[in-house]
Every structure is written in C-alpha cells, then in structure tokens.
Image (tube, rainbow, N blue to C red; front, side, top):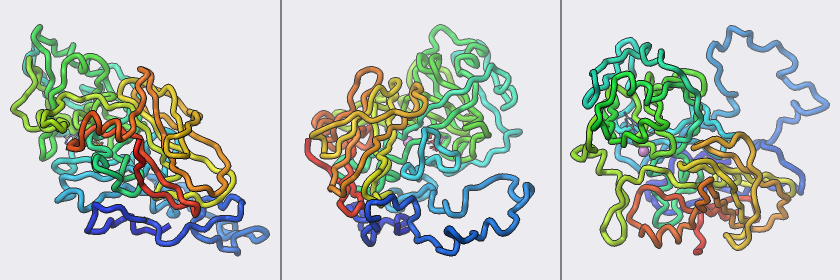
Length: 426
Ligand SMILES: Nc1nc2c(c(=O)[nH]1)N[C@H]1C(S)=C(S)[C@@H](COP(=O)(O)O)O[C@H]1N2
Ligand SMILES: [Mo]
C-alpha cells in the first residue's frame, strides 16, 4: 500500500486515489494481511531468523510499544485543513483497528491551543458560583470520591464535516476518524456537585480547561447530574497529555467539544454563558439562514472501516467486511450493510459488548467474486432512529453545516479491490 496518505495534495479538496497501482489479487486464495512479499527464507521448511536467536529480556521494554511492522498505524492530520497544527485535529486510524476500544496512542486529538503539559501536583479543580461553598480540589481529592468505569465514544461534532457537499477525503480515517472509544475511570460529576452543594437556581455548568485556549462550554445541569464524569484514567492507565491529563470531563453521547480536557474550573450558573464564543460557535447553519443551536447529542451513525480507501480488498473469495456504529442516544440495535448502493440490505453481525453510548463492532462474512460494489452501512439505534442517507440529511439541513453529518457513507470497491469515497443519490 502506498504511504502518500501522509500528504494529501495542496490542491485538495478534490477527490484522489491513494493507491498508485492495483492491489495484487490472489487467485482465489486468501493473500493474508501481508502487503509486502514474504521473504522465502523465513517460510517453511526454513527456520526463520526469530527462532534461531534469543530475544530481548524483560528489562528491554519497560513501556511496551507495537511491533515495528505496525509503524504505519498512526494518527494522521490533513495539513490543508487548518492553518496551524496547534489549533487542529488529527484522525484515528479506524481502518487499522478492530473490536470496540481505541488504543490510547491512537485516539484522535483536537486541541484549540496545543497540548497542556501539566504536573498533577500543581493542578487544581475549582468549583464555584451558585454553590453552597466554593471549593478547590487537588487531583488526589477528586480520586477519593466513589469510582466508576464506563466505556464511551467521543465524537467531534465536525467529524465528517468535510463531506457535506460531496465525497471528499479518501479514507475512513479522514472521513470518520474524529472519534475514539475508551474506558474511563473516574467519579460521577453529580457526587462532586453534591459535595459542594447546589443552590436552587443552579441550572448550568461552565467547565474550563487549563490549556492555552482555556476552552469552556455551557452544559445544562440535567446532563451534569445524569451521566457526566470527571475522569483521570483511559483504558486503565492515566489519561494521556493529549486527552487532558490529569483530569477531563466526560459528557457521554454529546459532542466532543463539551468534553473539556485539562479540567481546572467548573462555574455553576443559572443561564448559559452566551457571551462565550465557544457556546455560540457550535451551531448548524441551515439553508434558510437560520441556525440550529444546542445540538448536543451525537446522532446514530456508522461506517465500514474495512474495506475502505486505505484498506483495499486483497483477495477474492472469503472476506470480512467490518465497521463501527454508535449513537449518542443509547445502544445500537441493528446495522444493515448494502453492497449495491442501498438497493438491497443485509443485517450485519454485531460482535462484542453492546454498551450505552459506546461504539459497536459489526461484521459481514462473505465470499467476494470480484464484482464491483457500492458498500454502505446503515445503523439503527435503541430509540429506533435510522441513520439517514446524505441526501435525506441535506434535504433537512442544507449544505452549509460543518457539524453533525451522520449520513450514510459509500465506498466504491472496484474489481481490483481498491476502494474510493463516492456518493450515490438516494
Ligand atoms: N481544554 C480543552 N478541552 C477540549 C478541547 C480543547 O481544545 N481544549 N477541544 C475539544 C474538542 S473540539 C474535542 S472534539 C475534544 C477532543 O478530545 P480528544 O483530543 O481526546 O480527541 O476535546 C474537547 N475538549
Ligand atoms: Mo471538536
């Protein structure tokens, strides 16, 4: 597979092909995952190199890293998308992952003022405003509240935002990679708020980050008292600096910009903080010039991660189609997959835990005869909501939006196995 994914050309946004040549197709047999040809010296009946010598001892790798052969599995940014990497985004390599958990080092990053490098000994969380007593907590004091472990997806509201006017970026990493799904360890925000005591007119929360952007968002109290968490661990280990070390707010199912990282302050008030740019910025401009506001929940969505433009099919015969589905309103009830652009659908096999406001993994096991396919997935969540087509979405929202594009994605898979981001009308 070519490595020019690193650098989409300067003349984007136009669609492009990532693969320089046709992917080699095995003659019916499974080619395996090897993109490179095997070294015959390492194949049976020979004894491969790694069986002939002793390997590293247990003191060689105090913090383990992936195999060097996985070096291509990295977060990537799209340079032309933003003016500066300090206020930018990179993307989770969804096509290289499986199951439902995103490894910590591959969780996409979105910062408005770069990564704050915080010494937890010097970090405090202040809670003040319409509370019985203003309090300043150390990180250790926060950890003394009762703990809970929850798996949630975080999706940036701008995920797939570049696709509103048509197919654009060639890879699910770029079209859908502003999402990660992580197990958080933390405390319930409601327990900490009960400790400071809420005044009767306490209706809104304004969490603030300790990074250079001092990002804030207004969050309604009902959400804060429902399932929000203050977390310090992701997938069992400390939050990474990129993800808000030492403390971040977890706002399950709601748009990523509310999940304040490097959490240092929560103000309690009786109204949203309209004067704050961040609160009014996240709106969806409709065709009639009006804008949708307070669109906090992330609607039900799905994407096929394999095959996809960065992950072509390499063989005919036995193959696996897989992808992710999620909903900010609950669990995923069903995922349908179409191979002909939405004319016919079959139900995919959901595998792995089906958790509230978490990513779900789906599979279709099938025999590919080399036929060209228009692959789509369509998720249905526990409320019965059906993921819309892009045309259905545009009919309601127009094309001016950046945020909340949860339309059905189409990959054209050619008979040589290459896949391309396309749209079909529906
Ligand atoms: N303090 C702070 N919190 C922040 C941001 C930020 O720039 N500063 N970015 C927000 C946005 S827009 C998103 S989508 C998520 C991204 O979280 P991640 O970097 O863990 O993927 O963090 C949110 N929290
Ligand atoms: Mo975001």
